[in-house]
Structure formats: C-alpha cells, structure tokens
Amino acid sequence: MVVMGRVTAPFGVKGWFKVHALTAQPGNLCEYPVWWLRREGEWREMKVAVAKVQGNTLVAQLAGIEDREAAAALKGFEIGVPREQLPDAKGGEFYWADLIGLRVVNKEQEELGRVARIIETGANDVLVVTQDGAGGEEILIPFIADAIKAVDVAAGVIAVDWGRDY
Image (cartoon, rainbow, N blue to C red):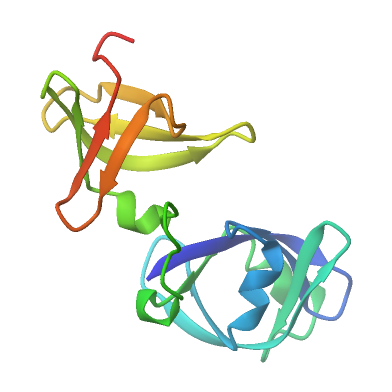
C-alpha cells in the first residue's frame, strides 16, 4: 500500500471531507475509484463516491459517509492505493514508498543508514536517514541534485554527496 494522502477535515454537511494529497498533482488521487484508509491499524477498503479538486483543495466523499459527523470521524486517516495500481515512475522520478528502507551511502563509501521517512518541506523533499541501534540519531539529507548523486531502487541504494556530520 502506498500512502497517497490524508484526511484533514470535514467539508460541508453532506459527508464530504478535505484531503491533503501527497501526489504530484492533487487531482491524480481522483483517478482511483477505491481508496484504502488506515489510522493506526489495518487498511480498510472504501469506494469513492466523488473526488474532485476545488480551488487548491482536494475534496471527496466515500460511499456510506453521508453527514458531517461521519466525515469528521475520518480526520487523520491515511489514504492509500495498492502499489501495483500506480503507473510506472518516469525517468528520474520516484515514489516515496520505493525510497523507504533504501541504504544511503556517501562518496567515501560510508553507509549513513537507511531512509526511514521523507519530509515534504515545500522547498524540496528531505530524506530522514537513521542507523539501526544508533539511539534515534537522524541525518537529514535534502533530495536535491547537489546531494543525491544516484538512486538505484533495484539495488536498494542511494548514493549521496553528504557527510555524517553535516
């Protein structure tokens, strides 16, 4: 399952809600007739009744969610789509889900750790790299050409021009 967005708030009184989309274009999420929802547990399949971009916001209604209270109860749920339903990434593009867990190695061949998560900052995305047993130490690496030299998803490695002490 690839997380594609998150329910943020109810929208109106008829079961609609706002979505913070994690897709390149928020409207891309509207193309999927079924969303999977999760909050601290198992994924649950939900049929999309309507999803559309309204201004700068993605709004949606799921089958069976018919009032504001039911929509409000969805706040905080992640919205996912099975990985096999996603189109292939274009050259030089990656799904965040494919980067999680990859080893990060710098030009001195020092392994910095593995990608634990990715932060969306607005200016550029940032890899959060952690080492097993390192007491929670995190290395933040901007996902920009100056820092990221190569991504080889098949080999499970991201090559970076970055030091442990940056």
